[in-house]
Each structure stands twice: as structure tokens, then as C-alpha cells.
Length: 345
Image (cartoon, rainbow, N blue to C red; front, side, top):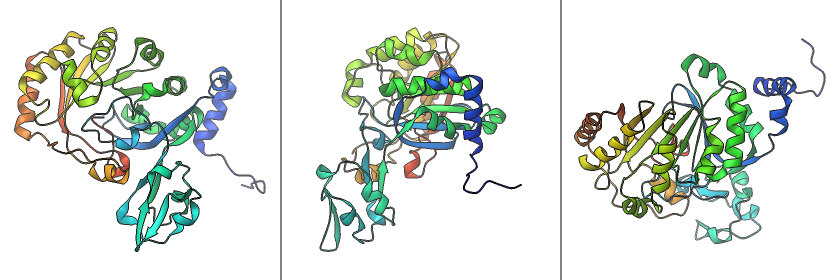
């Protein structure tokens, strides 16, 4: 088939979006909000039912001691420095007009205090030792990425999951993207800490098929100690969402929330939400040390994974409370550490 010179064929996802715009233009004309995206992970298997595309948003209001995705915590673009890949070529030094990079005695020195997060150094780094984490994308641009795998969603019962970071921290963008996905018939899920006013939660609820919410600890003060925020809004919002499809998850960390009593209290609360709510226990492993170092953040210390016997006891206790229990399973680090999904945020 002859093609017009200089004309580039549109990818299938783009053609589909353009076609739907002609059929139902109003929702697409409103699709103007940009979001700050950490990364988009295709073929995720642990972020909801079926094969999914997980959109990791950047920025979070909690600081969980065991966070597996520290690159999603800060609400702005930043550079991740993968020390082991650096070859000392000096291209970043030439690319940065602010002097954030230097070579001293053959070693790369990165002054984060001077970095503006522009990404020029990452673009110049052929060794890929410098990675820009965080880019602005419109809801329509993300939709195109999501629709690339819609055939897999249909055959597996999958869809799109908004994760992070914290999707409710970018509620305008998240609500719009969820509406666009629903208009395309794509199943939607949101992984959220739910520590937000109800007015923010309800904006996303109308276009969300499944909420995946962590209850890390039942005691408010303990929750604040380990996450930086109490859990009063989390529990109240879950009560308001009762009757909807909810998966409550607990990232289990040895010595913090791995007691039978703690899990029994959480499971009892989940059971009170009704039969549409289920419970998942996730053994939290310290897998993200490399990410913390690459971001110039202190590596969490003293955190250990619960053993298999402990996890089995906790699952038995949760089931005794009359709640449907999924797992146990092991937490997986985010895509930029080579994993497939974001767990235990």
C-alpha cells in the first residue's frame, strides 16, 4: 500500500483515541489536565485482577519507613544516580549549566542541592547512570499508553491501576484519567493510602471499580510513628466506601505489625466493611536500598521480613475473623529496580 511521503502512521492506540473523540468529543475536550508520572509499568500482575497497566504517579503525603518506591515520594522531577553504571565520561558535567555534576579524582560528584531536575544530564548520559524520574504527561497521553494492552485486559479481566506515590495527591489528573479509561470500557483500580478528606476521595470514586487500600496499623499513634500520619481519615473513608469493591492490604514488617493481635484487629475491621471487602497480607522485604542510595536518601535500617511461619499464622488469624484473605505473598520492588509492581507503599 502506497504511503504519502513524509506522513507517519499513527500507532493503533492513538488511532483509537482519535476515533472515540469523534464519537464522544465532550469528555476528550475536557481532558486537559497534566500529571507528574514516575513511570508506567505494563503487564503488571500484582496490582489488581488480570493483566494490568500500572501508572505510578509521583508525590506522596506519607513517609512509610518501609517504602519500596522512594522515587515516587517527592512531588517533583529528580535525578536518580546509578553509581555502578557511571563510566566517568564527564558528559553530564558539560550538560549541566548549574554545576551540579563534577569529576574529582576520577570520581563523579553529584551536588543535589544545585540540581533543578531538568534532565539534561540524563539525556547526555549514554551509560544511563543518570535517570530522570518524573515527567509531565497529559491524561490523553497516558490513555494512549493504557490502551496499548486493551486486548490483554479483555482476555484476562485486567485493566489500569493508578498507584504511586499517591494518586489522590494529584486528584484532578487522576479523576480525569479514570473517567477516560471508563469511557473506553477499561476496568479501573486505585492504590491509595486514603489519608485524604472525603471530598477528595469521592471525586475518584465514581470512576473507580476497585480500591486497594493499605491499613498498616490500627493504632493511630503507631501509624503516625511509622508513616508520618495518623489513620483516622483512612478508617473513616473505608467505612464510607463500605459496599464497594475494596482490597485492604497490610505490608507486614517484622517487629512492627507482625503480631497476631495486630492482624486480628485489622482483619476484624475489614470484616465489618461487608462481603465486598477482602484482605491481603504482604510480606514486606527490604529490596529498595539501591533506590534510596541513587536518590540521595538515607537507607531505612533495622527493617526485616517476617518469616514464612509467621505469615501463615497471620493468615490463619485473619481468616478466623471471617474475612476473605488473599496471600500471603512477597512484596515486589517497583519497575525501576527491576520488579513488576509497587507493593506496600
